[in-house]
Length: 288
Image 1 (cartoon, rainbow, N blue to C red):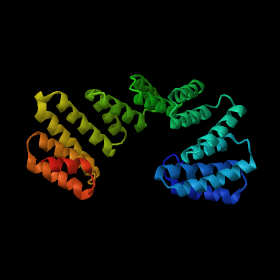
Image 2: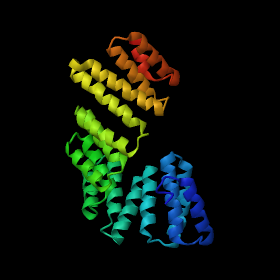
Image 3: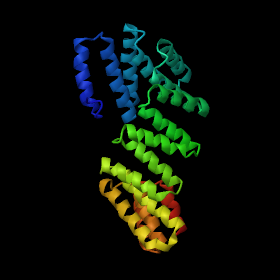
Image 4: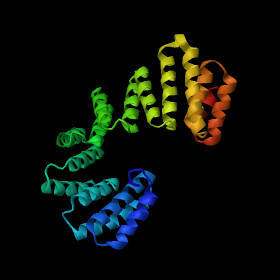
């Protein structure tokens, strides 16, 4: 429960109690390694991943055919860029169970990392054929096709949304796809959906601001309307995170567009105060 809520410290406290009672139970060692792995990825702390591997190895020594532990170790190998070792474990799992959707998914991640788009797509596709409700596989298919510039990415994001309508990632990715393809109205709808799920998700306010800035670039008739809305949403992002450098910079861009050079300079300087190496504001200030 705590792991599912990203409350990893509490999760570790409880799994430690379980370990103390049954130190040689494979499933409990696996669960501890799983918590540590997710905590390590979440916090980008490699020490948690190293600790996860210790418990994972113990689990495998207790039960060498424990499929979940093999799959998690494959993920650990992939995180460490040990693709050959990861592939061996995934294939071991598929020998034990040829219908394991997670194995095909991780195989897709390995191919994706290696830059083999065709095999990555094939593996992700097999994962959703085995498990039609595999949320993460649809997300990765969407990302893969987005990189290729294929509109079918939207279909995969929509499939992910149908499976989990309360997960931010699919709405966010769909919104960004629409945005980068200059479909700003649909992008806004996706970002607004994110805010319905989490009203404190600062990036969505920033992204909505960007849609108005994008609309200004292709439709200069309503300059004041678009720019004022963009500034409004950037400020909403700043209410949540006052150090949101990109939002501060973009407000400067907005003021520059409407000819308020004094305020534009103030914003660029404020961004540089927070990040001395923020090149967009440094360049904009030099141009002014």
